Image 1 (cartoon, rainbow, N blue to C red):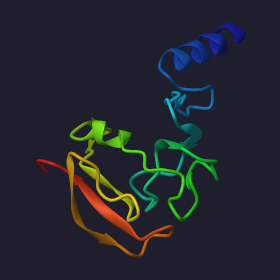
Image 2: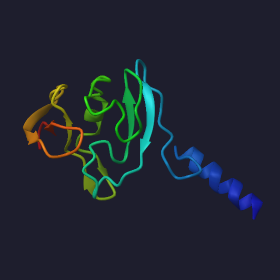
Image 3: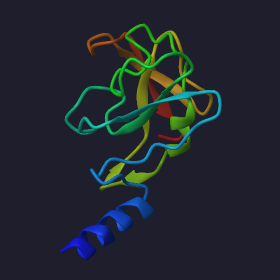
Length: 128
């Protein structure tokens, strides 16, 4: 039994997952890692759900990384996920704090003034 558990932990570590099944969030230059927001990406309205989160300032928590004012910096690394598919769901954009605006490679498709922590711009990847 012990050998099997070690093998499972080793396999999870090799795939970038921790022993608890959460992704091992990589370090990013000039950002503090706030951890992985384990809220469900499909059912949660949190724009950080199912993602590793980062801030240039102090982290609040993984699902509200920079606080509700967006004051920790504007992470645009999510744009690199445009067009990717995971679990049958294609990533085509995400809400970003209005204080950040939509990054290059995306366009503003509207506003989200309802989700906690907002208001947000709904940024859609170019071509979608």
